[in-house]
Image (spheres, rainbow, N blue to C red):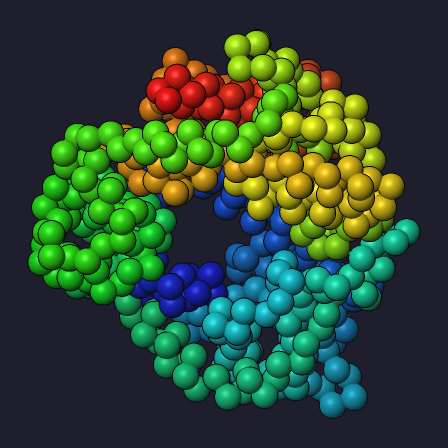
Length: 495
Ligand code: SF4
């Protein structure tokens, strides 16, 4: 029998196939590197757990998961230590470490606490996670009096020193965990048997019925018949379950094989036609109409932000974005050369004021502000205005001038087979202006930019590394606004 950790049990609940690969074929499971987004989730989880430990000032940390850590746990429990962080338990092939275990000396019972770096409870995942721990302790005959989830309080707004008590919410979920206990116990047994099988059980890869974004790294191994660009890449097909089911059950994987009778939205049908007929769809009149609504000077604007789980500065709540950089290309008239402006905060302080002050100097009072996915920049502007009422008028005015260039593509006024149903700035740039690319940049996507800024303002980062990050961040953000200008320019030329 293998050992089933709490993490693998949670993964099993998401997908048995996937966890089997993790245990038996780690080289396939870890084939693709973790994305910056995934790495950030792990780092944030560790950071939040560390801060949450301050809620239990007498806690003792146990490091590792091995036999020595398990022995140390037993020793401390026999000594009736009041609070342990990361005590490790193993029984019947089940292994888990608890975020916090508190001994209640009055009745010799225990309370368990699981820390989640989220603003609310996800009862489908968090309850099962906690119940696994509850069951392991019960199997070992420890009396568990209560079970709790500790998560961030989204209502908390930092003012001065971090208020640990207000930052977290502690929810007693004991009744829900007791109710789930039996069910989870059965599921734990099933999971342990599943991962222990030497040959991969005849598992069915249910993601074959889901859109591409839901597929894990092992999808191509379980589904070699599915081409790299397939019906799973049709725009928003994950939301059209019946249509995808009909195609998959009919063994239709290639876009060229999608029959006419399958009812698809115009957007989906256009994507397929563009691919199948090798046709570029251009609604020149619609694009011209959109462009006529723009007023010069044109301001191509892009922000980079860092979503900080633990509020670092006054006025911030958990996960509120810190705006640390902008890039702006300004075009005075149709045939002029764009001028570039930028701001990047390189110090460990709240950049909001300097960001807004700098923007005010270059954003002018008239002319369209062109962004890509306006809900993001407009949302950041609203938050800045809420923190800095002095800049309310500026931010309102900028938001009133915003035009979203991505609309041309989401509204399908221009469809190219090589967009492959995507409307991200990188997908569009690579087709319309292929001579410009993100490929050779030190930073190539927003998640990396965000993490790099966090590294930049850390005391532990060397001066040399800081210089490299500054240069990479500037290049990346500048590319975003230049790409918008270049896309606008290439569209203008076809009108
Ligand atoms: S693609 Fe989906 S169903 Fe298939 S192994 Fe990965 S997570 Fe599981």
